Length: 279
Image (cartoon, rainbow, N blue to C red; front, side, top):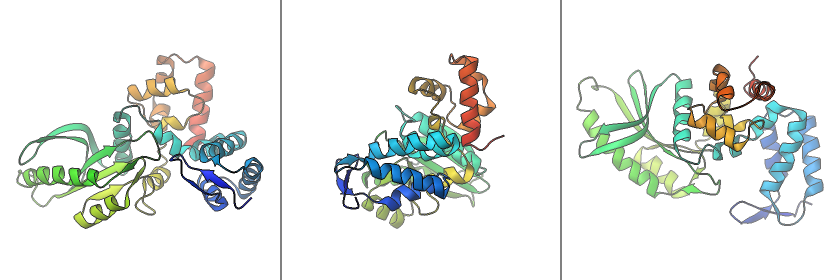
């Protein structure tokens, strides 16, 4: 079955790569024995043209029967796509991520540039460092941020930086522009960002410090990882500003406010604690 072609979300086909499946399972925390079981089961389902989505669903189903914690972490990539339909929950998520690294954050701030005003998705500040963050959310994983995005953001950042650098209290401060996306950047976008000094953060970039790496390092998973909640319930939570599982555990009463009965609340809390490894 090594020559089986799988169909990606973009419609492109490529040979099935068992090592990718094993890596994603291991990254979620699955033990070797569980990985072997899942891989064997997936192999039994392989037919030419099978979608990567179907492979993911089969692996997730098997993982969930083994461990809610591992299944929730395995679902992270899909969960990031569910943070919509608007980009605001993703902006809140990014702010929460930077809070986890000790930054003070503001979301949706109007700031004065040297030429015009700009709405900045997230401003993150720590000690003498300021990050002006633009968040680009996509609800389809095949969508990419092309070079036009960092080109546009860099011009906005430079306009704000020129003004901020002249303000009292900003002497000696470091100002950086950053673009964050839940999917990926094109090759040209990465090349421009590196050349222009614009920081970029995506699902898998930069290596070892990508979005998925930072989420795992801080244990800050989105509420959309929770399989015990349906889409409507997840949307109700994000509308109320609850985008992280740790936030939900701090505000369990929100589950009652969105209409859940106590039995389901108990199930959701149990899964939430398992995913974030909270006692």
